[in-house]
Length: 109
Length: 113
Image 1: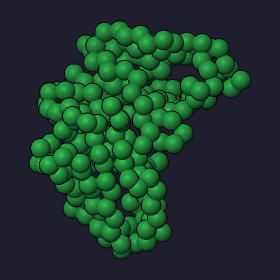
Image 2: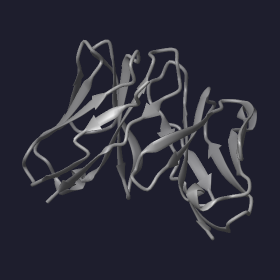
Image 3: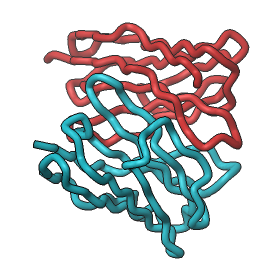
């Protein structure tokens, strides 16, 4: 399978701070998604971003597929941003996603 | 559209029992995948179904099985439960082969005593 590494494993921020989460993967992919897992366990879709840059409000993501990494930016963090962020990758035509171990973000007021 | 739904949300079983979990995909989605999440192994792919056929299977023992019905709803079954099967089981749906974005349900938290 594809190895996915996320860093940092843990991140503690003051409310209002910015952060960058990184995802490295071991093989070429054409499917990459970022998820936020809420305290109840549900994975919430943030971005589908196999390449390029996307923005959604305070969140943005960039994937450089040729260099096998993706970045998730969170600006002006809020306490509701707390949780675990997962990067997952796959290949079109294959049916499964390979997940990283996640970054646990804690935003303190 | 309603999201992916999973039932039950919580389940407690004892070793040796079997369990069936249910997943209803987003309306119009025909592909359903199952994942297991544990603290030790993280999120791992179990299997995917499309048009009532299993298309791919992860590296899990035969005690883990599934099926899909003609309305795209899916069930997974775990027989002869072991303590290590305690996990959050997540179901994801997508429109079908050739579409990549997967949408996850809230999960079923299984505890095996």
